[in-house]
Image (cartoon, rainbow, N blue to C red; front, top):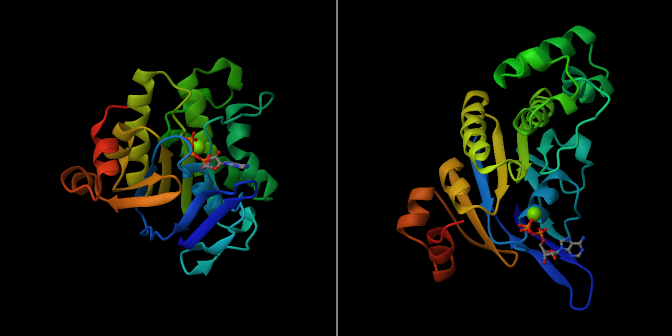
Length: 236
Ligand code: ATP
Ligand code: MG
């Protein structure tokens, strides 16, 4: 992000993301964290191409993608409400984007099986979503992103529909998976504990303004301001 802003029109206009400058390294797991309304989703959606960039620019790798359509950005996004196609099996759900992209059938099958292996979904490939638990559905949503082998994963509160126990388990799974694949990941959460346990670095937002971006350790030991100290220090 280079001085990237998103201002929603209105009276007064809302500076949802205000001159955000942030470099995310190749292969990094970066967490965007902040209270409700701080601009996390807006920032992520700007990177995905789902939201206008009103000033500044957004780049992925060497490319300025500010004006690029979402499908041309080499990203895959996992949402909070990961609606699966109810009439398609797990395998069909996972392979759907590849089928749309006209990938050969055997390649689709290979990538789906590989992703299913990583996500412990092999026994469920022929089931319909309604016959899965919440955690399994969430993994299918991850699988749909993984099969596309994007250069960046974007995740917006992907665990918020899961119960507390499953959330902790899935947290560890996502972190392990990202380490194995080495895919650059930008992960949005309002949960400090999630942010501090998962992120290589954590970017703290408040009212659309970046407060600090640092390793969890540094954020904890050396908060730049009282907001960061209070936010990181308080339980979720
Ligand atoms: P949450 O944790 O609740 O998901 P967030 O950090 O993701 O919050 P955003 O959804 O990015 O926050 O919203 C940032 C600000 O922009 C908020 O003040 C919100 O009300 C405003 N906003 C978001 N979307 C729109 C929109 N489509 N039109 C006008 N204002 C919007
Ligand atoms: Mg949000």
